[in-house]
Image (cartoon, rainbow, N blue to C red; front, side, top):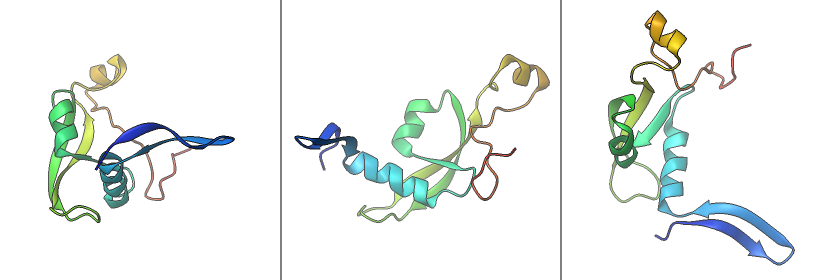
Length: 105
């Protein structure tokens, strides 16, 4: 399937969007993720594995894909985030949402 990013529509009614299998895969992984979880594909994991901590969660059967997709849970940045977090020994988290998906107040 062709992947494309750009203007979609006709004169007087343009939108900017992305279409294709990569977009579909990202949407399916987002749909499978629990609150506070970021799922990434094996290809994305290979590109960022030196930067992030990730756990393989196994193969997922996703709508629109003929074969199961290897998925990883991105849990944080390697070496922490800010200098304050590194000094405290905390692992920098990607997201900080409650089970309802809301940011804490």
